[in-house]
Image (tube, rainbow, N blue to C red):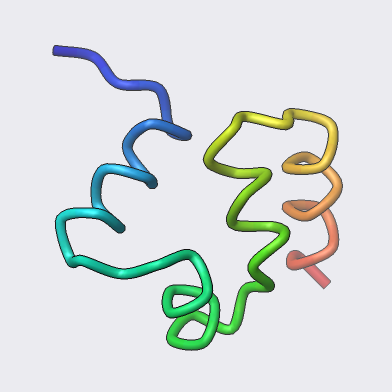
Length: 54
């Protein structure tokens, strides 16, 4: 089975029984970004990836 990255992120989060807010707190990634990652907002994801390289 091939999962898109956004689906994989959500499935792993749910498997660990975390809310987006809890994952945000544990990971240091803002909850709005986690939401965007899970829905596959490609423009925002690309911008985020560019920013974290610096």
